[in-house]
Image (cartoon, rainbow, N blue to C red; front, side, top):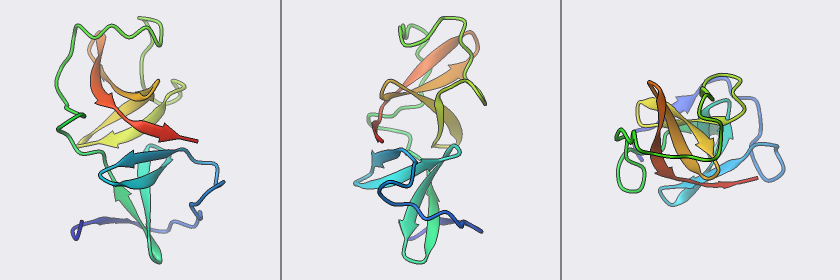
Length: 116
């Protein structure tokens, strides 16, 4: 990850007990903070995204039948689910997997390991 995006002006100290959930991906742990994945990297914080591919595709899955929320539930700001960066878009964490609002349905963009 030599090419990384730094989160400017980040005053919050991430660590055990900081109040943010963690997501494991690509062999490390990031903190889920306001829809971003924050990775503590020395004296600064990098912004990460879950990579598209493997267990986290970005494909349309119109047959996805998720019983985790009502069919009329719409993901977006204030919906009650944590937003997370996935590739070039935003997904929402629902019961350990990524949901992507897509028209009248949710796409399943695969599992994530969330703690906290």
